[in-house]
Image 1 (tube, rainbow, N blue to C red):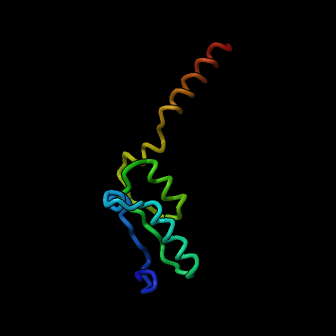
Image 2 (image 1 turned 90 degrees about the horizontal axis):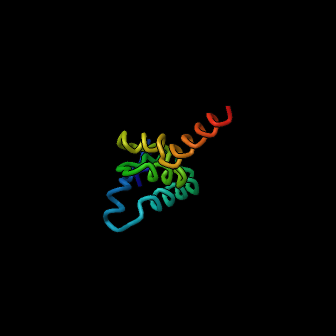
Image 3 (image 1 turned 45 degrees about the vertical axis):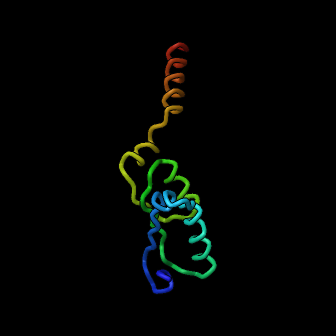
Length: 97
């Protein structure tokens, strides 16, 4: 209804939706599909993001933008497996000299 009324953004609160027993990311996907079918130009602003994975899943589901804590954004930049891989690469490079 918000998109039909001409709203620029629709903002489902993903984390809170998850808390209520529904799948917030699936809702983003459903809204994106409806917008595509109906030709709505409103953008989807995923809110109440709780983790780096939430950011990725919402983007994959069709969210245009999100609001989230800095910790979630930084989590996209730093991952334990990346740190392990980098340490191994640097050790191998040092050993190759």
